Length: 264
Image 1 (cartoon, rainbow, N blue to C red):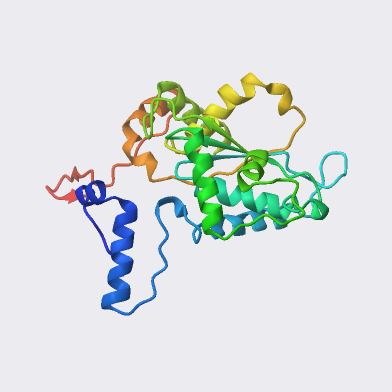
Image 2: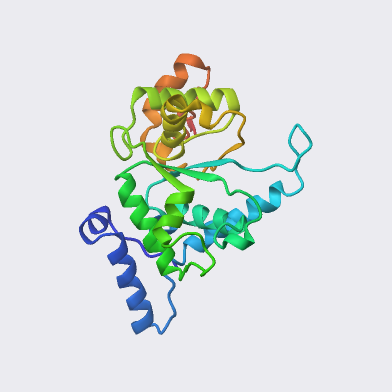
């Protein structure tokens, strides 16, 4: 069953309150156990999905070799963050998978996580990651070299301010970047999350400290965001039309046939 709300209800009541109301209704009126997962999967329950994603990545690269024949390792992981869940799960997952939470368990150096914020500010995301980790029941072992959870997070995670004009607002440069990237790689970036994050990383983070990434393996974690394409479709088509012969298919367009009929 899908329960919907209007945009007005969403704005007036708020996402988390709507979820709480629905869960309370299901529990009280239908005697159903409800498991709330908010926008972005950003709570203690939803973040386990991102940790499982890290587990999948580590299995995928296991046994892969670099050009020198050594085991492939990740030095940096880049992702977009808008509510903190992805950043929390990947940061904690990478720390756990590399054994860097407990000092004597360390297997190898964990990659540095670069979360590009598409809204709010870095302090907000550091606080959200800590809050989510606490909600998950994440605790530091006595053998950890870190004295607080916040210290562990700051050791593994760097949050970059990359919101530009603001959430879901794009500059011409960002849209051009998404367009050119799609043409050259075949990979589509949405302008709200992944596109904005990669644009900021390439044009700002790399430019400010290129030596920090030289000869490194950087993984860009594409978080989807296809729905963000719809609002920007006209702007994107303007840019694509300047560099490509791609045309938008209008499935509602009709043509009159010679006999007076129409075809869709």
